[in-house]
Length: 393
Ligand code: PLP
Image 1 (cartoon, rainbow, N blue to C red):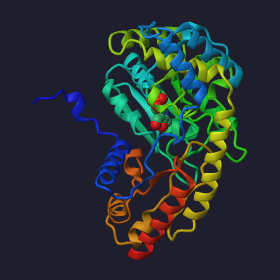
Image 2 (cartoon, rainbow, N blue to C red; image 1 turned 90 degrees about the vertical axis):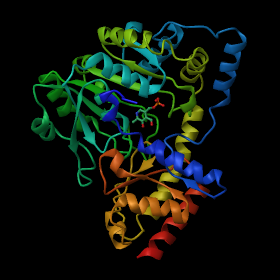
Image 3 (tube, rainbow, N blue to C red; image 1 turned 45 degrees about the horizontal axis):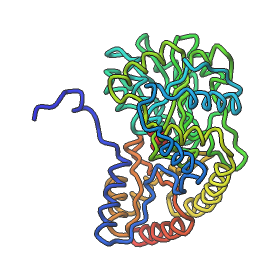
């Protein structure tokens, strides 16, 4: 079959690929520990499930407005006011099938062929592919562990061109867990305003911050910055609702209108039942978010301490999200593997522990481990990784 050129350049998601491989081994009866997951392991809180069931019984099973129910937009507007002090109008909000879909709509609505989007590496695997699918050109800034994987204005000065349309910031970051401070964001925002660069702020891990670290949205800097920012967020990670597929964008009304037009000819509205669940998530009690956060914090502290004791492994302590992103190049070399991807494949084969190679995130010396699994699983996985390394060194 002769496929479109467009799809030839797209690489499949490496996180989903490792999860699939681990699933295969599990199905064959192996005791696999998956540290590849990009989703919280907790159930969606009961009050959210109850609200969804009530919505179904009440007959809310029909099409809704493409950009989402007015009540959900209201709940999102209230959340943005409560958490960041933002004022948004309903015309500035679109709800989609997860933050991933909302980002897809954004690039479709924003990019002309050849226009560039700056993506700091390591990055979430879907950003460059979505930019390419929209005809745009992803341009990476390779960050360093020494600078905690963060970009500065000097990096932007070197890389920005007349074709630069947007910059993606993801704080807390997948895969590094780093959080930008207000002081770090201010000069970046100033640069973007001066050069007419749209800021895409992916805030999906906003609620998952640990050990006293604070989340700060770049759009909080000033009204001018807010006007030049697309805030992306959703309930997947905050409320353990990955399967419900609800995410949103808050931005300039003309951009939201264009994104809505794209959605109206592709997906239409996100599932009506999920929208009712999301209304409950945003309007209901937020304690369950905090108890999940605390569980993640305990896991992070436990796993980080053990991970950094392994020979050759170096890792900056994550401040948020639920991933660790250690450099294991030295370990992989000492174990005799040609590449980190080979080390990862052997770990899965021999010890049945699934981690994701860093190459998919734009950094081949690293791996990503997710701690969205029980402490028991994590301890067990670290025992196996330790055994694996000692066996090969
Ligand atoms: N952004 C980042 C950085 C992510 O890690 C993810 C999910 O893994 C998403 C966006 C998409 O989340 P969802 O589509 O479930 O809302």
